[in-house]
Length: 461
Image (cartoon, rainbow, N blue to C red):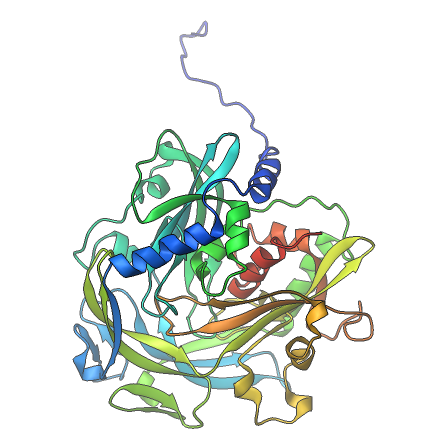
């Protein structure tokens, strides 16, 4: 106690960064302790066999609790929660290059939690991963975050069971935060959707459950080499964990951020929600909403049965893309430092342009166009010699809202003749570590680029 009788504890300064974390992450990435990848995949298969899962397409009038609002045609839930399917009017950029269109979009203003619990075993960080079913996933069940829940779900609007381990992400006394950021999701299908991506190191023992396993980052990296095994939410949350080490890059951090700010200034995203019934070029049938040219995606309805979810049965709408996507980074090494070619992507559902892959599209949507109007670098990544493909795997997108939305994720080596260090407008070379640093913050790195960042971290130097 001081002479004046003041017993308050004086605040003390803390380090601005956890300088030990990058080394701890590196040790976990180098570790393959515990169950093998084949054993984990076997466990996922076993959970599919032991727990009843079923997803069936249904007509819209068989949806329970969902209906088309008579005044707008929007597809809404009777609770007023979860999400809605509405129309969106979009314009990107300034005249004379402004691009405008209208489309259906998912409106889900709630901020969900994508949370992964961490603990150290024998000096190595492990992460608690869940075998979770999502109705839109190929194979239904994939490796997921410890907690993957919308606000409506974890506040039990559905009147279902509680979300396991949620308390570790809502009660600060239960752990130490290793990463935490609000991140956007698919701007082509969501309107300004954000989730809280978190990794929390638990304090004390964590209760076990048969649907969860502790895995090192190295084992998760290994599983990323298998198609449709690690789900989108796990890839997104883990991408914010990586520190940055290489001090040099082709462009300084200030130059990179200035370039992105300039891109955002000249390609503003203006979007307005409109009645779904008024969106031109889209037609509602008994079981789907389709584009007149049978491109892009369609809106469908499904009935779901899942024995290990908070609710065992439900119905819902899903977006179903027409065709398999491609998401790719071109990569080059500049004076020994790995770089990737990013593109500033201004998607209809974004607040602002974000750093995205070199190529991100569904090729079938462009098949009718001449070569000059195809996305830049598309032919380069899709026809690359196998010896230049550093990474290739199929990964599904958000299985809770999208049906069989699968993209081929690629990392492809390029040379100066194909991808010069002075790239076309809208593109920029960034070091892998610059991208990792920006992924720790909100609205800089898109969800597809975060997946590719995870893929990059699986590669040997």
